[in-house]
Length: 278
Image 1 (cartoon, one colour):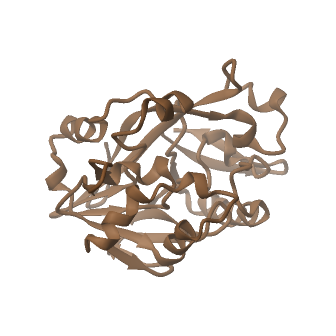
Image 2 (tube, rainbow, N blue to C red):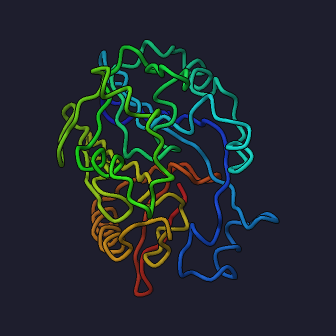
């Protein structure tokens, strides 16, 4: 737990899964990235599923919801998913909460490993997993998720998010916005259109939940960019701008997918940006 002014931040561990190491690091050679992320026999590296709970006053805000329950055995094998179907409930229970306590859910984007836990009963009539919450989705991200774009359509599963929209549980937002004073969104377009990163500011401190802009601590290095990103040059510039602010203002980063490091800071020298543990 991290206290930031009036905000209590609690990273919630929802399990582990694996993705292809080459896809995670793009043009970076395996001989470099494997020093930090050993690959298995299928070239996959371990990834964390880590959402963020923000508590302030009567608000219980959840950022992303992880892989999702009700996945097929084949799907779980494909991604070597380690986490039970009740992983989100269990994570909330560890901090003394139940799903009905969550008041707001901010979905950074609609890829299945970020929003899959938003619904349950994935069959004919999926239902919200957090029934008393408002879910916040960026308009351009929703439009892209529905577009069927061949490059990344496999990452979007309609049963994860469409019931939220059709059932009136979702609020469609457009561009940068603020949920409560001190919790605002930074919009990035390199990974996928209108991914919203959550920034918490209080008492002179700033924490940024980096989602898939910087999923792993090693990817603080500017060229370490995923092949999954639709517009990698845009990602590069977005990283440069945000990391410059992080260095100058002393931000702490919260990593969604790093299996070892939950938080860290950033330094800069003539060779570029560097992850600083802590």
